Every structure is written in structure tokens, then in C-alpha cells.
Length: 257
Image 1 (cartoon, rainbow, N blue to C red):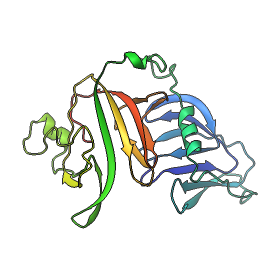
Image 2 (spheres, rainbow, N blue to C red):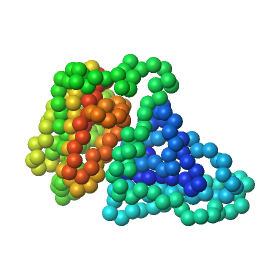
Image 3 (tube, helix red, strand yellow):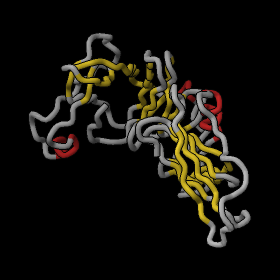
Image 4 (cartoon, rainbow, N blue to C red):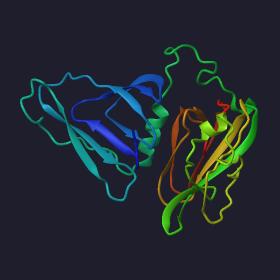
């Protein structure tokens, strides 16, 4: 799982068979290396069918000015020592490589039971979009500290979890509508930001990134359909770029933005 930056992982002399992404079974595609972005989790199968050696597991950063790498060891019980050959190289700042990987991931529609809207069944021009939300990320100093904001609001966690306050109707914890539907492009400020939405509405959301580095977004517990691309659970927005997708609101409880 990516924590603070996008990562690439590869196994010396081995390939990985991707079987699950964010709790959903995928078509079992084989990769020599995988990009893992912030908030993402992948499950892979690796077959230990190589000669008996100690093989390197290499993890390196993606889209960073300085590429940082670390290694671990995949140890065979009959190992004769370090595996011959150099460490496997991986992508560094190549954006197309990562986008092509994302496009190659597909749901396995024969696993985990039927779904009401199989991949490819949507006619996007007929989806009843009821609302458009534009979310722009930004970086700013607030009270002398580096903060990050969405539509100028830098999120502050309350003492009481949002869903607990919502369920038990505890007042004073948050207010719905404390983050705007569109960027204000004003100065960043601290707030427990909560955006309301209607259950079962289809919402068109536009992510905007005006910063000089890649930003990754994760919508916890939701699938979304990038217009013209694939079904994902997390997305990367490159410098000075934007991405638009359609999402169905699937929860009655309030989610923070």
C-alpha cells in the first residue's frame, strides 16, 4: 500500500499475477512490476518456481526528484546464496507507464457473484448526473505549518468521529456544507470539512491539480468510473492536470472530503 508517495515494486526473476484490488477480484493479469499509489492495496500471486537462490524484492519511489529505493529478500529454502544478475530496474518518472498499467486492470465479473452494473454496461450519456463537484488540491502554510487543502479547506479531525456524531446526532462536531462544490482559490484555512450528497445520486466529480507534483486521491469505500477509462478505487492526478469521473453515492452516512 502506498503511504506517502507512489511506489513501484518488483521481484528479481519473478512475475506477479494480480488477483485483487481494493477488495474486488480482477482479471488475473501478469506484471513484472507494479505501481502502487497512495491509499491503494493490491493482492498478487507469486510462484516460487525459479532455481534455489535468494532473490531481491525491490521497492522504489515514483514521480519524485530523487528516486529512493530499498530491498528485501525472497528466500528459497534450498537457497545456494545470492541470485546471479543485477537488481531489476523499474520505472521512475514515466507517466505513460503508470497510466497504461491502470488501464490494464479489469474487474473479474465471474468472481464474487453478479454485479448489477457489469463493466462496460454503462452508457455514460444516459447516466442521470444530478450534480457536478470540482475539487482542487492546494498546498499552503497555515499558522506557520505546511498544510494541504481541498477547495481551500484544510481538514481537521474532530475529537468525535464523524460517523459516530452523525449516527447519534451529536451536535457541534461538524456542519454539512463546510466545503464548497467548486474551488474558491482563496487562502487555506482549517475546518472539519463535510460535503453533503443525496443517497443514490450520480455525481460528476472533477479533480484539479494546479501543483507541480503528482497528487493521488482515494475515495474510501467507493468505486468510480473515470469517463472514457476504467473502474478504479484510487486515481492519480498529474501536475497541472485534471480528471473527471462519475460516482454513485452509496452511503447514507456523511463522509469527509
